[in-house]
Image (cartoon, rainbow, N blue to C red; front, side, top):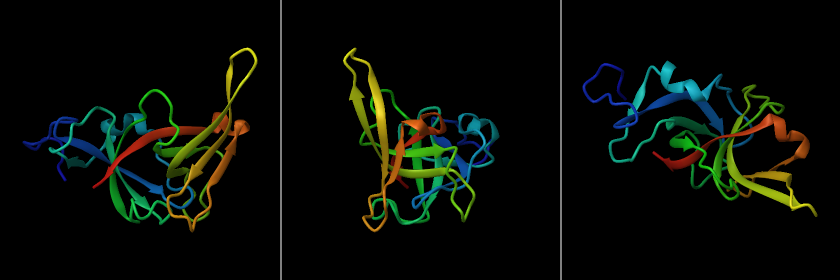
Length: 162
C-alpha cells in the first residue's frame, strides 16, 4: 500500500485507490456512497506497476463464496469501469438499490451478468430479464426483471484477483 505524497504515488500510472467497499459474492454487501469519486477520497492506494492502469480502476475486497473458485472469499480484486457494448457474459460488480443483504445492509454483489432481450417489430430492443449468476453452483442466481431496470447499475468489471 502507498499513500499520497510518497515517491511511487502516481495515480492510475503505478497505483489505484483501495475502496472500503466489500463486494458480496453471496448476496448484496456494503454500500459505497459514490464510486465515481473514489480517487478523491481514497486514503490508501495499491501499487500495481505490472498492470496497465486507467482512471476509474480500483481495488476492493470480495467476501462470500459464490464466485469461488475464481474469487476466493476475502480476496482483493482489481476492477475497472464497465466498458461500452454488451455486458452479457462479463463478471460485474452490480449495485441494486432495492435489495439489501440482511447481514451487512449493503447493496453490491459480484456476479456473472446475463441479459435476455426482446426485439420488437419496430426493431426496438428491450431488456426483459437480467440474471446475476454465481460461479459456485451451490448458490442460486439472482433474477431481475424490467421493473428493476432503474434500481440496478453495473458499477465495475472484474479485471483479476490480486
